[in-house]
Length: 192
Image (tube, rainbow, N blue to C red; front, side, top):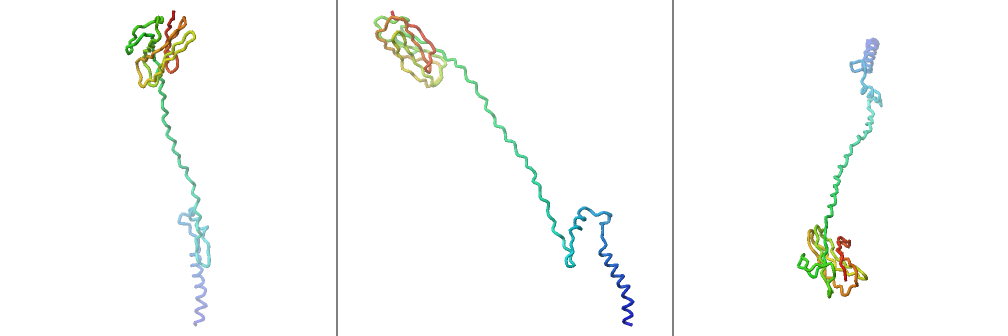
């Protein structure tokens, strides 16, 4: 009886094992009828090795660098050029027998007889600090320069220089005031 029992049980036992195998191996679709893209990708990566299920490592997508916006440089303020101040310098030059500060004593246009020297007086307005004031006497065969003076401050003032001339030929002479080497005013003197 022991052999008969096995013969009879073999077919039903084979049918049960076949049903279990079909149930275990039958594909499942997640209940919606269609597999999602992720499930399809996983199903493609399953490999059977020695009866065990091993998932192949997935390759992470290469990250795409997001461009970082660069900050625009802040424009630097361009300094507004200061327009140059108008030059309002004015002066007059006088030939004086002598001076008392900015006052001329004994102003003349003709050289005095028996004179050998005089004071050249320059009165000026709106000078700038650093200006150099000087005088020069020119005429027939002569040029006499008065010593230059550089101003430390700006504004109004005067300058004087003692001019020693000795014997002068007859004729017209020019007494000129110079500012930074350029003539700014003149007066004409006559030798008899």
